[in-house]
Length: 165
Image 1: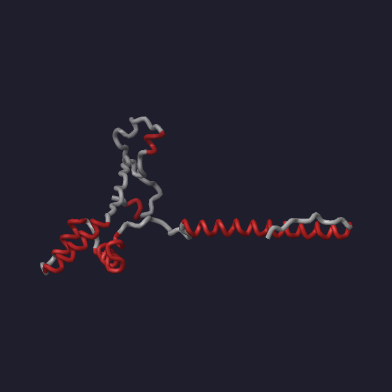
Image 2 (image 1 turned 180 degrees about the horizontal axis):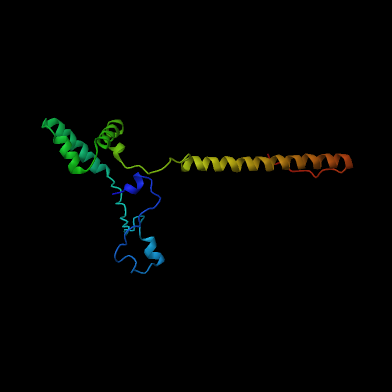
């Protein structure tokens, strides 16, 4: 059928017209909706990711243990197919349950762990404030020492401070 490509002919056959394609108005939205082949594209939204609560995880792990204890061939695999989970997910739940008990199955907040919790942020804020106040105190002490020297040089008596200690 494509002998022109085999024998090196310079002429390329024209594509046959598709009925109905030329007759339709070629608007911008219509052209955007067509793929490379000219067929209409259909976008299907991704289904939401399934999440399991700690109760569901515990139930599934216990059910898997019961399937293994029954000794019935294929019981665990059929249970995993019924639940729609993979063996890697089941094994990670088993590890979480073994390491931390039931609290280990609680869903975790996605993303990177914060470097500081609320207590650590408060401590850092107070340390920063303390450093600022120490700098101000150092400046105030330097100003007072300068004032004392100025009074000594000028021969002015300093006012007496009543200490009631």
